[in-house]
Length: 335
Ligand SMILES: Cc1ncc(COP(=O)(O)O)c(C=O)c1O
Image (cartoon, rainbow, N blue to C red):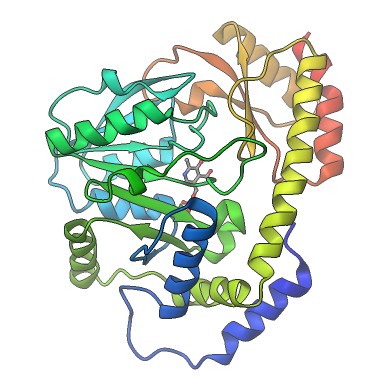
C-alpha cells in the first residue's frame, strides 16, 4: 500500500549518506527525532527518549537478555508466540495470564514476576483494548512489586473510530518499556522499531549491545527518517488507515453475513472471529485450505492448551482482489 514513488525517493535519500565507519548502538539522530515526533503526534507520548531497535520482537529478545535466566515473565494467553519464543530463548520462564473483553486480566497476574509482556492497544490476537482502569492497575502493581511492563504497541497507530487510551508508557514511564515498530505501519523490510524505557532499562540494553556487538541497522532508520522528513510517512498513514478501515468493514460484513460474530475493537490489521470449539476451528481451516485459502486459527496463538477457539483474519497483506475472493468463499468454509 506504500506509494512506490515515495518508497524510491526515501531509499535514494538514504543512499546519499556515506557508509558509517562505526557501529551505532543508540540510533541515528534523524531517526530518533522522527520517531519522537511520531510518538507525540500519533500516540500522545511527549519528549520520548528513543532508542532504535530491529523491531518489536527483536527488542523483546534484547530486553529478555537483560534479565537473569529463570526469571518469570507474564505473557497474554492467547498471545504473540514469537515474544514467548524470544523470552524462552533467553532462558526466561513465560507465565500465561488470561485475557478477556477488556484485555489482560490484571488481577490474574501472579506474584514474583520480573516482567510482563502485553499488547494493550490491540490485544494480539483477540483484539481487545486494555481498559483505562486496568492500565492504571497494571502500572500500580508494577510499581508496588518492582516488575517491568513491556508494552508492545505493534499496531497502535491503526484505529478506526476508536478513541485512543493513554499509553502505559505515559502512565508509568518509570516501570514501562514501550516498543514500536515500522513493520505494520510501513513494512517489515526496514527491520526497524523503537524502544522508550526507564533509564536503567535503556542502560542495560545499551550495555548488552556494547558487550555483544548487536546494534540496530542504520539503512532502515535512514529510510524511515527520509519518509518522515518528506511528509510521506504521514500521508501513508492517512491512506493506510482509510484502506484498512474499508477492508475491515468488508471483513466484518462478510463474517456477519456468514452467521458468525466478530470480537475486538475496530483497530489494527486483523479481526478475531470466535468459534464454538476446537473441532469447528480445525474443520473451517481445513475447508478453507481445500479452496486454496490459508486461514489462521487461534490454537497456535496459545502457550498452553487452547481455552478459546476461532479465526484470526489478517486483512492488510493480501491484494484486495484476493481478500475479496477469500471473503466470498467464507460461507462455504463455515458450513
Ligand atoms: C504482537 C506483535 N508484535 C510484533 C509484531 C511484529 O513486529 P516486528 O516485525 O517489529 O517484530 C507482530 C507481527 O505480527 C505482532 O503481532
